Image (cartoon, rainbow, N blue to C red; front, side, top):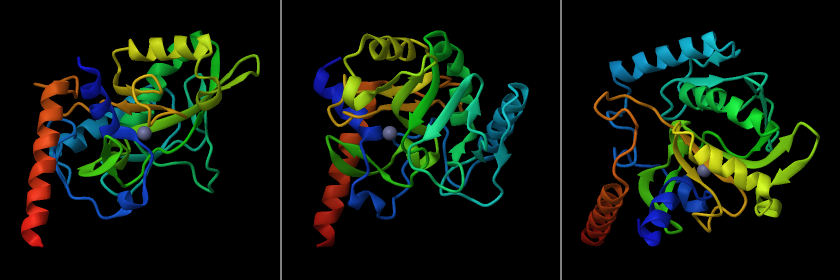
Amino acid sequence: MMRWMLLAVMGLCCAPAAHADRAPVPVSTINMPPGWAWPPTAAMRDRGRRCLAALDRAGVQHELLTRSIGRVTTPVVVPEMRFGGLLVRPVYRRARPPVMDCHMALTLVQHAPLLVELGVRELVTGGFYRNRRARLRGQSVALLSRHALGLAVDIRAFVFSDGRALSVKRDYRHPLLGRIEHVLAGSGGLRALVTPKNDRNHRNHFHISAKMTLDDAHPDDMVDIAELFRRVQQHARRARRRGRLAQ
Ligand SMILES: [Zn+2]
């Protein structure tokens, strides 16, 4: 894959929010899981129920939120922030634990054994749910970020069982972070992993987004990257044209 194309698509899902990102976001199914719609369809609610049952089976204590949270289909909090053998510590200390979609919580549980095997016991995280737009080549575009669905998290640092902490910003070249990146990239369980290696906008964190499989015809929640990029460019051109006509 061409490098510019990879960077463009990576930037689509994860760069830090700019002020403009806080504007109301339009709904588009580009960059959304196949079959995604808003309000949620019966299939989406069904997948949410299945996910909650999987969290129960994994022994993860969680609370389903009954109030609606943006466009998060199955919003949960995990009060103790313990996901299997991993403790997750948000860098932004708030009274309540962060909201995420159940599929994000399940993704952390599923990846915990891989990280524990590498000696990780704790993740220091930035944002989970944020209602904001995606960014393309550093620019905000009129599409939702996966953070807006509660399906993404930014990992700032990894804490190991011997007490060492490696920060992505400061220690990215440490072999252990390279090993973690390699293992996560090869797990097959993530929709996207964006790091300083594949996007210069991700100097200080690993962005992880969870798969939310809604359509059995697209079980990987992933379209062809080149096709996705083409569609995003087309969408941006149409939006610009509409903007010009409105002036
Ligand atoms: Zn992110």
